[in-house]
Image (spheres, rainbow, N blue to C red):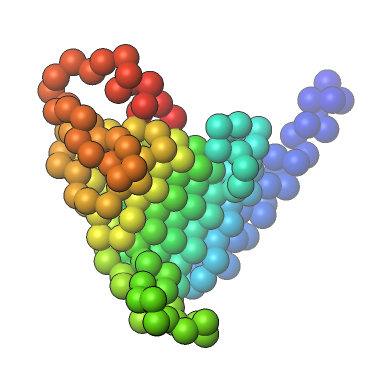
Length: 206
């Protein structure tokens, strides 16, 4: 019994820290998310979180992507919206303009979502901070989409409702609703209304 109570102490402390972080960053929550570990939030952009959201942010909560905690980096004036019943696992979301995640979305371990290039892409870019000149485009992930572990979603991408992104993919183009995409760069593997092969299922695991 004593060991059980001792084991609860770190969890209780994490819960307190997470509430403090959400409050300090003025995060709007429909319902307090379940957070395993400690969530990191940088910046003072606008964050809205729906109900029934579960966030893994520790090695023990998901060893697949446990090399880092879940991180939200939101610059002032940018907006991150997370819908209802979303699962996020040890992932990083960088928002310099707009990232919208629909309802019932599953984001696997160590996924990266970026709505910015971070810097100019020209070879003539200077070594000084040129983030203000970086291209920024909104990212939208539709309802019921599944993003496999270690995938990277880049600026301007719209992933349709129910789409599946295979593990380790780099998504640079819009993905229509219900389709299954994978690879680097990600390409269409098949329509969602056809039977998946074992290869596709393995590629889309989280």
